[in-house]
Length: 270
Image 1 (cartoon, rainbow, N blue to C red):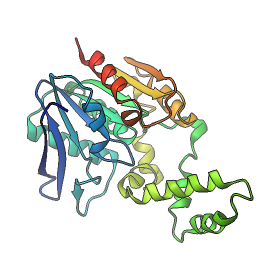
Image 2 (image 1 turned 90 degrees about the vertical axis):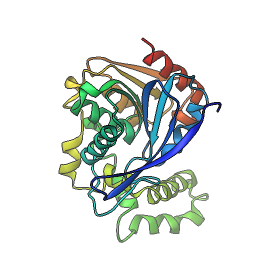
Image 3 (image 1 turned 180 degrees about the horizontal axis):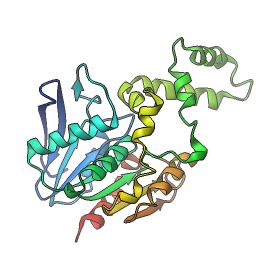
Image 4 (image 1 turned 180 degrees about the vertical axis):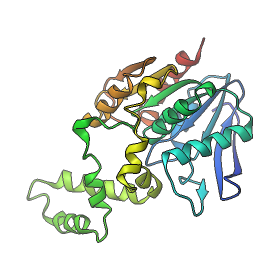
């Protein structure tokens, strides 16, 4: 990377929390919101390929990485308001929002609430909509993280014999998912560890007609069916365009950073 990358911190929410972000260069403002199981470092490979002329801000979302808050209730609405406070403190009038997974959900929610401030949205495998046929998609996750950990205990018991039972791949995938979720408790709260009514109230499928912001949706063509279904749902927004990336499953920032940078440059160039 030829441009200088700096780290910064700022208190938010009347001092109840501190947001950490990475920042580089000057120009058109791009704000990158990371995915469910990671932090702002997810976007560093993309910055390696992004040309000059972009003012890139890459925060750890509140509750993730080094952005820690105390005695707060994490929700999508709260993440949106913290982001608004952050933008106000930095005197950012207009931005492009780039969001992956839960970051895409927050970005789209922000654009719906503050449309005058968002010039464009780039959403990668975004969460935040629930196609009717996928209503129970987080049931397994709840069981994996449940107390007492019945399903986790069963998986550990099955692990030594999983190869003989021809279920080794499934057992290992579920155990890896649990490990991933334990490292990101805020993502678990946002996605499935809250009251069902609260989560449903923040889903966006019924509000996409109001999303007038120009929107580019990038989706790995080999990703899971639920990810494809959610991206297709977002593509119903009035000014949205869906691009399927061949031979890519998930985590576009790491799987295809140069291609993603090219899409970003094309989208934000007048």
